[in-house]
Length: 119
Length: 368
Image (cartoon, rainbow over all chains, first blue to last red):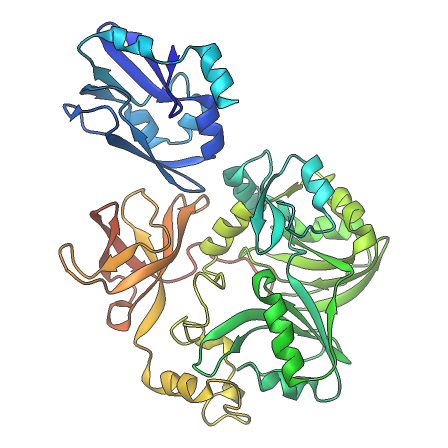
């Protein structure tokens, strides 16, 4: 599992990357009440704001960490946003993205590096 | 946050693991480890304890205090029975709301509770118009709210008398004299309790030690009051909104309206009495978004999906944990204010449908 500076995690699953948000992010956001995910089939570019999440405090955007095509989204977190607070690294993944080369993940932080980064 | 003021319960908040934020010049707990959602639900299920010591407590003395206060607010002060409290608001010459407040008749004086953000201005305003204004600075103010509030308060203060909604009483207790009102800002039955600064922390500790009581932060206080349809001054009402626009006619007693015994005679009376007779151009309403996305403050409201010009704006919006749905308060042009009207809010560039609904979103449980 690798981590972005925007507090997302990425994990390789075949030729896809699974993307979610970190425990640190879910804790900072507070209780989530709303999640809006991209559509399956969307071609996205790194930095595109493709997810909207709202907590009891405020709305935030989540950006695509890499270029690719959205091939699957997690309806469970749309139906039950609090899952993101309960299991951010597991059941509450956000979307799966098809990338040209999964080695793109090597450019992101390791768990230890992220731990230092997030403090 | 060194310039911020602290309440007498500051150290207790830290000990309880609160996340502290600046609010109205004070360093206040926005949430405890339980989190906003569970704090909210706990308050409606059992009881929540809130530190509201940042609010102003003011005593007005003097034989003419009631009449002098009536010159500043459009409420019936002189007709308020001893031991009773009423909601009111200071108005300006344009009929706008300078602040909202609670005032209680305690026999030989009036006790006011005003908002933290406005208390300096309120006290200056009072002093400019009357003598005998005394700010209370040696007492904390706590709110104990929820269905288990009465039993919890009775446990630590057994002398608590029978009280109903908006009654006030002075109660002897192990913590000294408690100034109690059966009121609050959550829509739940409950109490606001003024307690001497020196014993406030012990009082709070003894309440929190009870199974039914959890400490609750400002985050849940906001979602609770919004579900209850209660205004936050500075958001939903302010110096630019009149009580009639704010849908607060219920808080202006008949004695102060046209034809009443003491009609008018408060700042902005001409405008407010005219709006009572002829209506106001815009009205505060409740909005229920049809989807799950909360519509936050400043969301613009449109009559149709493609109308160019907005007809209103959200002033408070959040997800209601008890409602289990998003909810907003907004001002809309009065022709669109009827319950059931379908409107559209602009959320991130998309027009999302909303229904105008009657307030409150969650029925209150006051002990009337």
